Image (cartoon, rainbow, N blue to C red; front, side):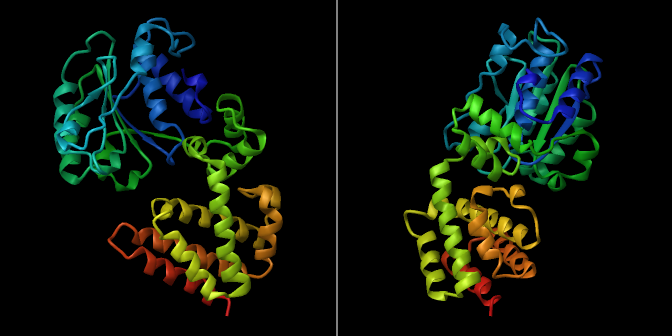
Length: 347
């Protein structure tokens, strides 16, 4: 049910109205940051169309149609052919197209084209959700165009993406875009306490550093995050206060060792989050507005030793390293270079 979803109340109202007026477009593009619930909203939209006992334009969540629409087991195999098809929930009118190793395969799009032309099996409509639609290559996207342009009246295709600009303009022009915003911190905090058994302190921290993503907040291991946060503070102390090159190179080695290499990007994200809070304080932002207010005193000490422009430059260095990760770079050498550049800005 839409009412059980966290945040994006305006979007809920829009989708309810479209379903109620029977004006839900056949081609939809759900756009917003990662982890804000776009895919779950797509499933709830399907449920609203399938439900046998709707109330206030919402699915009941308990009838057979609602229950089966929510049961989905994606493939766990490493065989690409297993992703060259539409993957159905236990409801035969709700199907997914999922990427395989960061690629929505053209075979899956061709399978969708065939399935989209079948009449619904038991509901009033069929719904197909293409997750991470931005991972379609041009060939797959072009194969989808005809179906988006002339979809059967009883078929709805929902493309879900956090990177709409990557999609072909011809794809975007054929869809009605539904925008999703980051979820408010307070709403995430309440959800974590009420539904996920987080303590108040854990929920406050997870909600703050999740950047409006309910998915990211739920996935945070608070103890592990605090460990990564402490390492990030060591980086900034060494770079901003002490200009300690040896300490930075030691931390770089630590980040790239066998124990931490699988968490390299998570550590990079944490360093960016900590640095962003330090930069906010240097710019005069009130401590209560930080992503991680419990660290305000420590961050203020670092902020007092740097100019906002220096900290902004360091954020740019992190972003540059993140972009370079998509190519086959030597992570240890790249981390060394980033840390030394961050420290050099102090001198």
